[in-house]
Length: 307
Ligand code: AMP
Image 1 (cartoon, rainbow, N blue to C red):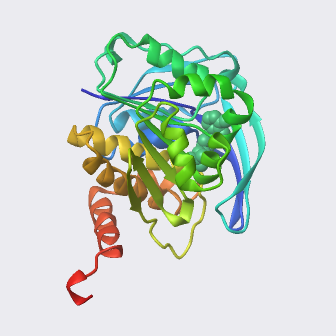
Image 2 (cartoon, rainbow, N blue to C red):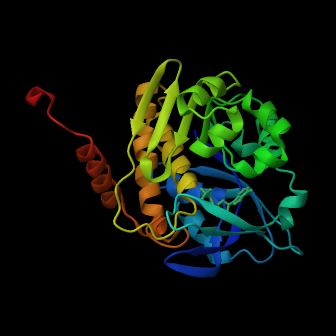
Image 3 (cartoon, rainbow, N blue to C red):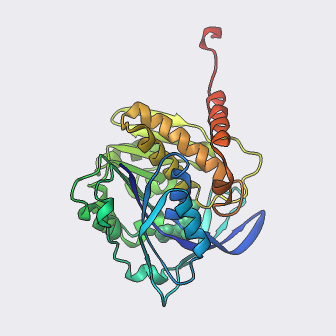
């Protein structure tokens, strides 16, 4: 049993109020894999890179139980490149550059040994490619989770709506939920998005936590109040990796267990933002994760008998 993860493996250039870095490894699937591999393995990755993607990074991922046989290496092209600049509040950012490079001709292929995966994490990528992976699987996974972003809503909304009909869980942020539904109220947008296909909807609100919607139920997970958010890049993907990693670790797709999964996701996101790129996700230990989860429990733990 395993998770399949699909997404970008990339180079990023990032500017935050704390500093600037011109080239660092990133990509939605890279962050998902680093986060998920703390909780479960194998993580069966599907992605594409150029001749410039570092061998050491591939080896680092492999050493954590990430299967890279679904990662295509194109010898004469460059990896996907993204550049973003964060605003002072760190909750919003401007995309400065999106160079598709190898992604322009990506045609993901699901390796034979991935066919039995129980869960599918469709990381942020062209919706048509997300759909292609769903269609290549002979048996539908027990849970299909989809992450996307405003870029695809602006450039590929029709394809995105098609893939939405085939997934169980959608992960987006609050402004993307408004964009997708055309509703300003988060609750109204959740109701409208739950009619588009997914049975579960997770709306991330950056430093204000995340909401999980299912039928008429809603659950709130806070974000850890951190003194310093150094670089929010990849926080959404680390959240997704923590979420699907916990689901695979526990093999339980109930609403109750998804509540825990979004806390695990929030914990992985809280580590991710502490340094540039996926650095913190590489450094942390099992003990660090347990301590952070305990901090989350304490954050919302209060005594109702005193009321
Ligand atoms: P997040 O901060 O969670 O939205 O993820 C940021 C990561 O997503 C960066 O490392 C980028 O390389 C990658 N990324 C940015 N734009 C896209 C896009 N349009 N499609 C796929 N991945 C992207």
